[in-house]
Length: 340
Image (cartoon, rainbow, N blue to C red; front, top):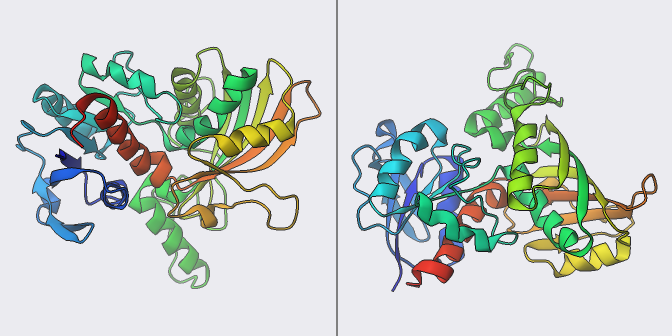
């Protein structure tokens, strides 16, 4: 016996990826409904070897459905998530709306699966920010061994993190470089993204950080340990898919780089590719379509007593969004609903 699953936002990049991953991982689905906004009603999407037509989320009856994977943005989630939750359907939300709600668990299954039991307060589970998700998968096993005091992270985030419009803008601007008569001014991003990097993701906060940077700080504390100090600089780069991060970690006690490498090799969800030779590391283009979070460039930080540097790469549409949501659904099914 399987589950009755809803995917809301099925025509977007993340929604389509959710459908792909549900099929790839052979999630036990008895029935599936794909929802979208009114303007996308009837759009066809793929689920395994099936072709499904989207239904209007407005007025959809969530009664009798087990789980709903939401990829519709905060405004629409604010309207529809409470409706689904009240109908008894557990919402797994990819937006930022509920991440900082004390009554909503923020889950990365490799890191804090036990926290999922808190879903009963609102019948909602939050999916973290894409840049946070891949980093905490790497931090948790190291934190368990040597207690992390402080993290300094710089991100190199793909344009797909800004949705289809971000990908299109990079593509169109790149083409325009070679055909100057077709100038494409910045629209989705604050400055030209083609052949450029932009140290600005989301809005600026009063302290000079951006909201994307603030998210990484707050979410890491909620998922891993509130005592960890985090400072982040988040940068948009001219890459279509795949977020990369340079992570500097300071521990309470000494951790040797070889032991850190061994710990990460054994950790769930991680693939270590760390050879000190040309090409002995993973870049964003190589992680596309993969479930793993890849760790490379593991080395001692000689400027502090207990420091490790590493390079972290992951497919942001997968681990950063769709895969993590499906893993949450799997965890919920295995621990609570137990129908599969």
